[in-house]
Image (cartoon, rainbow, N blue to C red; front, side):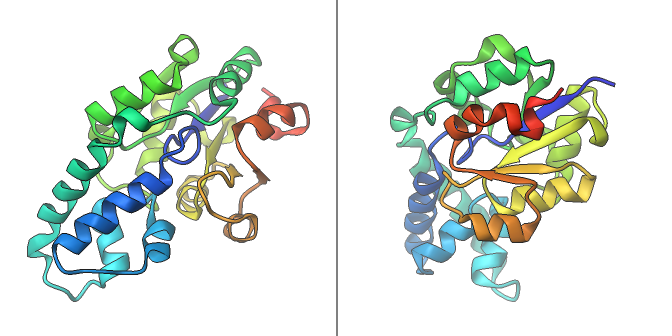
Amino acid sequence: MPSAALFDVDGTLLDTSYLHTIAWSEALAQFGYEPATARIHRAIGMAGDQLLDHLLGTDRDHSQDDAISAAQQALYARFRPRLRAFDGAADLLREVAARGRRVVLASSASGRDLEVMRRVLGAEDVLWAATGADDVETSKPAPDLVYAALDRAEAGPGQALFVGDTRWDVQAAAAVGVPCIAVTCGGVGECELRAAGALEVHADPAALLAALDDSALGRA
């Protein structure tokens, strides 16, 4: 079977983790909730419903959940002109593809957000495929996204590696039997990522690219 590299996008290839944190903080405040910003940041990477459960508890009134999520999406949309890729992100994807791996963006972003992120990333020439919100029923830390990305790559778990920036990425990949290489540029520390089970930890895409010869990702 072909080998594949499945890349999370937010916080891994694009510098968006703190923008999502700000948008969630402001959306929650509109509805009278004010969890610490650090708690919100540590929940980034979860789907909206799971993030709200994580921050607010499961025994709350859920009637406002859709409105809170809609507010977050609207608040985050104002940041689209400010999105930028991490240094080395596109070059990393190109080098991984050149070494024989099918490169798949494993995202659960909505169609418009995914379109913007792909444009900012600027690596369309080497993308095998990408997933979006319509491809998953339950987002990370559930493994649905990893299954969807494997399906798009036409690869099995034993032929793939996942690259992400949160423990939710590591857990979702592990549930499918896919090793996860982590980066800390999304704001999660190396100790937490290794404790979650990350195979390797690098500072950012540029650092992973520089270490590619010694990384499992560099071996097709």
